[in-house]
Amino acid sequence: MSGCWSSASALKLKAVKFTYYMHDDFVLPDVSAVIVTSPNMTLGSTATFGDITVFDSVLKETVSNDSAQIGHSSGQVSALKESVEKFITFVQDITIPGYSGTISCSARFNFSAPNWEVGVNSGTGSFRGASGYLTASVAVPDPAGYILKSCATMA
Image 1 (cartoon, rainbow, N blue to C red):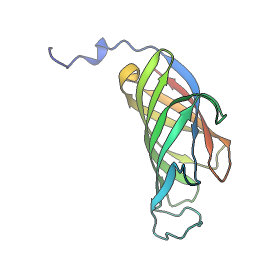
Image 2 (tube, rainbow, N blue to C red):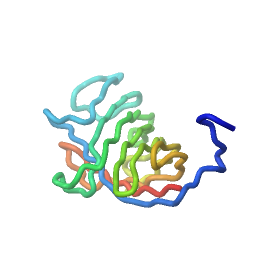
Image 3 (tube, helix red, strand yellow):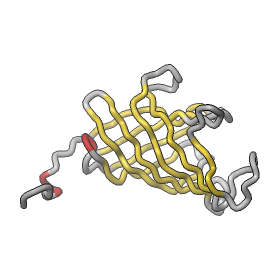
Image 4 (cartoon, helix red, strand yellow):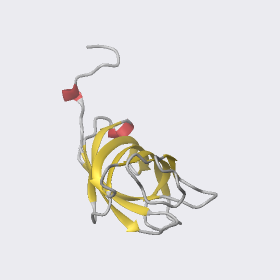
């Protein structure tokens, strides 16, 4: 084959595992997550079936707001019939020593669980052809903005 096509077997993937933190902010002026549609649209109400929240959050090396920024996480969360059940789809643009690129992820998960798995579906750059999963958990449950811990395991 020629051009930009290559066989999947030609990809040389190596296992990678790293931890990072997504910092959400729900307070002006740095809001990073907002409800864009809701069947009830009342400010301050709990999430109901059909709510869609979009986010564009900063990724950092540690839980500290002062830690180095390593990328962004952008996507959407949909509330499902069970109030704690969510569907999420997102892309993370990550630059860490030795790696730079994006990973695409999606999952159905129970937000009240201590942690949950999110599938890594694909990637670009250093993560091209990636597959694997993220284990996510709430590191800081602040009503002004959650900080989520992510442990990525990919090949």
